[in-house]
Amino acid sequence: MTPPSSHPAHTEQPLILMEAVEKWYGSFQALKSVNLSVSKGEKIVLCGPSGSGKSTLIRCINHLEVYQKGRIVVDGISVADNPKAIDIVRQEVGMVFQGFNLFPHMTVLQNCMLAPIRVRGTGKAEAEATARQYLDRVHIGNQADKFPAQLSGGQQQRVAIARALCMQPKVMLFDEPTSALDPEMVKEVLDTMIGLAQDGMTMICVTHEMGFARQVADRVIFMAEGEILEEAAPDTFFRSPSHPRAKQFLGEILAHH
Image (cartoon, rainbow, N blue to C red; front, side, top):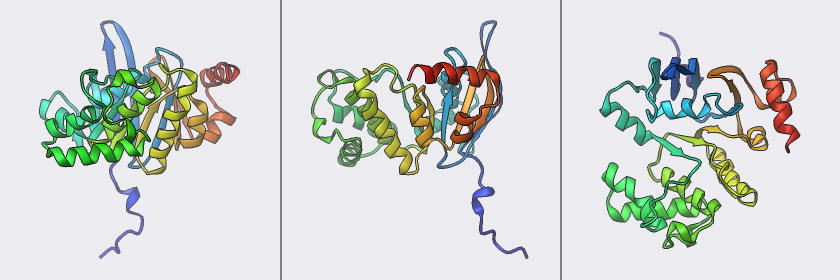
């Protein structure tokens, strides 16, 4: 009889697995044989030039984009064209976009309560308690009764993060969450994301915020033209990227900061 392993983490299946994923828009290939494995609690930063497929990649994970080849498995569930499986996966995967996508006719609190009540069947009192907890978590509990239009962009983005957290997802996807914000609001959103990372949330972030990548990422993944060209720990990636495209990208990005 073999003794129980003291390192179960190595035998755990990845929380997200992408194998040879390919995606086309007509004749344009947006993703070329993408392989990615993300473990529970891991923080991944996806970077690369515009149009490199970063947003498409994370949108395939919860089937907001349909992929044509390969397979994606989220927490043991295959995200194929099975509506039931897609619904289950979307409940486990929180998503924060560039735009805040809040319902303007609902208060902040109502925005956060909507999905748990509608999708998970959570009772109203419990949904409200959870919503208030996460609004406090992102430091805007005092804005709960306001409407989105009464908040700054940074506050709206933090509401969007709280709203995603109210579904208590297993993984959070961020698609350039700060790129639509005024510079003075970027820090408050990044600070919120750093806090989540410190809490142990599994995260995949598409971002150009390299300071955030250095501080939070377990791995930085560099994409160009639909392919993953490099993945490395932040120290290695920033100090000595091996791919020429990654060197060029870093040179351009760091020149702007």
